[in-house]
Image (cartoon, rainbow, N blue to C red):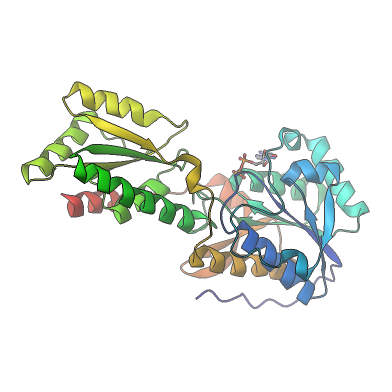
Length: 333
Ligand code: ADP
């Protein structure tokens, strides 16, 4: 169980703002609820910004109360809505945003999002001396410096549920299925879904596997009497790559069906795990701010909550443990 860091209060902030930015993730609402209720419990007002940085630069924000976050812990998506905002890449726009926050009497900003959102938050703080803190919310779990992100566990569970269903058809029809999961250019979702879903082969951007190798794994399975096979594949830069693999397998005499899980993985009821980490991270973000700490994201390392500077997060690339791919193959063939 995660415990909150013990931090002495050094800042007498009167109000903070909170926003969600980039791709939505299940559990973001639990994080918003924790930020609002923990801040209110410490006598700090909270303003909820609508639609990420787009709403921030428009000044679209409302004071939040304990009841404005009632009954949301179990809901996917984000009640604050989210967006991608091209204008926030401009220094002058970020400066205007900081001025606007100050004019509204807001002392600090909590950003719930992915690494892109944190790059924006880091610049907002560095250029304008305006305290910001991040809470990692992305299904991809691809943020360097934290072992876990809000939404990842739910997305993995959603994809595994789908694989269980696909497996019924795969075995009834003696078919090979390629199941394409989300994760952009990282294979965290694919590797966990592959291992947990009992896939024979996992294809991730971090490790090149040739089509003949995939075919050999299918062949090995067939030799020991397997008539169906599940291949889990990360989407990569653009969804649809799995069709190319299916075509290449077809040329080698293997007929494979493709199933792209797509946005089903982004929505839905957050798992208990995601609600728990979101609650702990949301409260910790406020605790760090009140202790005078900012310009970083709340992270989980070895089951402990930490504050990782945005700079370290931005400079690092999270490494996928590749053993999981080998293990999946050993266990499935
Ligand atoms: P995520 O936060 O999920 O990684 P994005 O990468 O799309 O999502 O980033 C979300 C938003 O964060 C962008 O639309 C933009 O407004 C802001 N942002 C991202 N990168 C930067 C950057 N380098 N400088 C300023 N703002 C950025």
